[in-house]
Image (cartoon, rainbow, N blue to C red; front, side, top):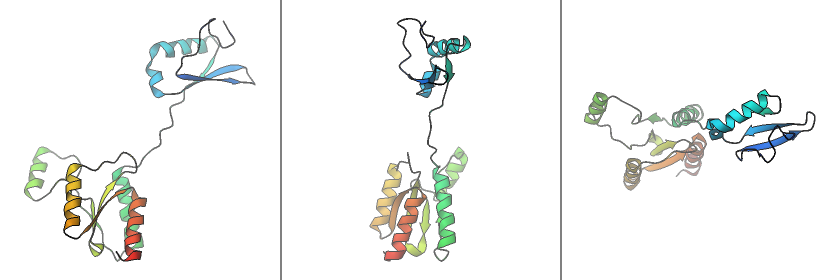
Length: 177
């Protein structure tokens, strides 16, 4: 056995990074990917080494950047609009979300159309399709509606996050576009 508790010729699994801590001269293995934790053979070997006192093992979950949902981004933008520009009314067009089959049929019959942008600011003639900052995609129906609305003279934009929407509205108000 070597100083890391591994048999001669045995190396650390490639998914792990090894660090030597000078104060204790023990090796700490840090889980580099969450997928490695599902590999039972490697996980069991590490647990055995740690249990025998030959190795200190630390499992770290990968740092996942939390991205706000589209709904959260939209709510924050609407709140900003109502606080900063109360003279410009804004309302949402609730087209998305899960609904029962009966509700979907009723909404279609009463005029709901897939792809209509999320928000409208009448005084600016502006439709906004909100998307989350990362991972948001514009559907074919949404692209079709955005093209249609532009073709009849409205401003219709996709904004990835509240900051992009704030910048858009600020520019329209300042530049008078």
